[in-house]
Length: 166
Image 1: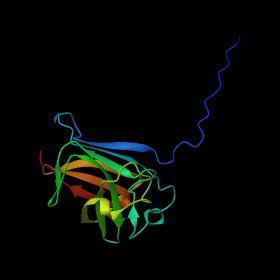
Image 2: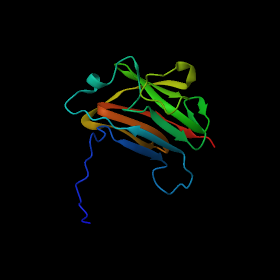
Image 3: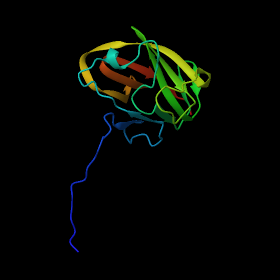
């Protein structure tokens, strides 16, 4: 019996592919601290303000709401966040972002967001970059020994500094 090979058809490949950001970034520290899993929407000729709702809760990415797993207790501003799984939401305003950690996980978008599940809300300034990022991006970076969760899309940039408290 002859074997016929056909090219695999991939219908509707995700337009906002999933990605992860990990901290620590290198293997010089053996202890895992955090992994963020998120989808990366693309601008594709649109602007940030066309896509992201202003003054409304945003899932901080695309598809499923962005999730973070902390393997260690961390501190953001004065709040200690116990190790565990959380969802990241944001509220975009003209000059600042409200960063939200919420205990609801494995949810689609921000449709079932409930502020009763918030464990943290902090406001941070929006910084404007000179170069545009086509894809929404999350990364960890250290500044003067302080780890930050960095977010960027189009010209919008913001960061959340934190400390590991374990």
